[in-house]
Amino acid sequence: MILLTFSLVLGLALAAGIMSRRASSADIDDYLVGGRSFGPILIFVLGAGEAYSIGTLLGFPGGVYAFGANYGVWFIAYILLAYPIGYWLAPYLWQAGKRYGAMTLPDAAGSHFRSRPLELTIAISSVIFLIPWGQLQLTGLQVAMSALGIRIDPTAAVLAGAGLTMVFLLLSGVRAPAFVSFVKDGALLLGAILVGLAAVAKSDGTTALFDKAADAGAVPSTHYTLTGSSLTFTMTTVVFQAMGFFVFPFIAQAIFAAKSEGTLKRAARFNPLYMLMYPFLVAAAFAAVVLLPHRLEGPASNQALLQLSRQVLPDWLTGLVAGGAALCAIVVLCGSALGIGSLVSRNIIRGIPAEKQRSWVRVVIFAYLIVSLVLTLELPSLLLTLVNTSYYGVTQALIVFLAMIFGWKVRPAALALGVIVGDVLVLAMFMVQEGADTPPWWAEHGLNIGFLALLVNATVVIVSRIVWPAENPVPGLRALRPRSHSTRSPRPTAKVVEAR
Amino acid sequence: MSNELKSVLLSIGVPSVGVLGGILMFADSTAQVAGFPVLFAWLFLWMPLTALCIHVAWKCYDEAEYVERELQDAEELA
Image 1 (cartoon, chains in turn blue, yellow):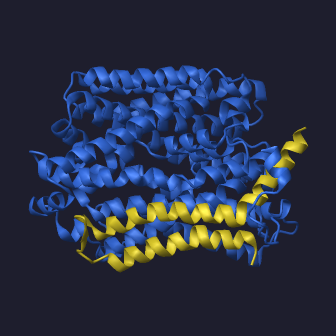
Image 2 (image 1 turned 90 degrees about the vertical axis):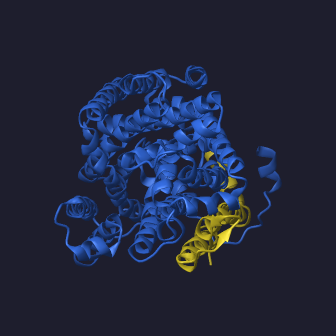
Image 3 (image 1 turned 180 degrees about the vertical axis):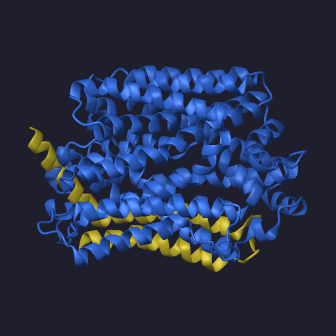
């Protein structure tokens, strides 16, 4: 039964992928950014599809199961605060995309500052930090399959996952993950809510559920409260990751694909409501502390949700949850693959004619999937330690985009230097943190290292503004298309109503 | 104060103060809301509240202007 509903979910996804072909055309801008034509619903679904990876459905409950509030609070809070930032930031990125015909963030920055080195810096740092991201999805798929207790070889599952990703992207580029996300989000929401409700029902209500969890080993100091360095870590991580969320390459695709700035703003209002699935996942995670027969340790804690599901739900519903998890991995892998494909063939290699780019993107995607597969199967732990650096590294480009919006009098070379300094610092601090002889004061400070690197990066840029300002700075996006300063009536005028 | 600043203060400022302030306030509290640790309950409360802040910012400070921009863009295309 598990296998039947699991295959049904994947079958539905494949159907959605095939349907996505209908409106597509052969142009490169259709392939990468859907011809900038997506309305608010498709933008909302694509944005949610790319944002909630297998880390949300399996990693989040696993983390809360193992570490409680110490893990759950920063994870929820950073996404929650990322959405308001996106409400303001995303329309500016879209504006740059439209103005310069950009399909990637380095396209936008490179054209705005008329700087090839800056374009290359952002593109290369994004590609480096996206490689562990793709592998994380395939590893998550392995975990999902091994928790199901059905006879699917995890290796075969990983191969099938990568294969399906390739099929989707061959079908219609960015339209495929957008359409598949309808199925994926449906299964994810339904799965999270059902497991949560069943866990609550099995524990005789939420109050009893959390009381039993406390008795069964959910430690107050980690599961219920934040103390000392973990509070510092939570605060700095929330602020840092909330700021970086919208400069991730695959989130950028969901921005550029929008029909207009207003579309992005309209869709943004509903993003925090999607998060209302988290209470169910938190309840499920605490229930897993009580209900699972054996305590899961280390990476195995990622199996908490699916193991719980097998205990509290009928098999056919567990198949649905697992199908949702697999699709989370596949959709996010589609996003990263498309991101890498476009970064390499538009920004890193120069001068590929527009009509050839689509084939190039596909070749790069194929290579990326092969590399991810090999790494997942041969070196599973190496890059997984590095995945934490994805956020730290990619976010360093934020300063460039702020300079682009506000029109700071800085040189592109200084912006590129800031990104490089930030990235190198992140990797260096990460080595120290993960190394064997970490000094005790370092282990205890709790500050998010990406946050520290971003401060240094910003300092480099500010100092350059003073000692080496740009002679002929490019006006910022705010000046290129100014907003009116008058207070307007919030009601649309007659002309506006008619035109809508 | 420009509409953009008002919109930013309402849509980013209010939820940030609410969420981050709440985390600091409840960091070492073992209180529970319907069983949930209060830290989690506070974040859940801010999900609809954040959506509401963004919605009000859109309606009061942004909508008219962005609708007009969409019209301008449509005219340019035509």
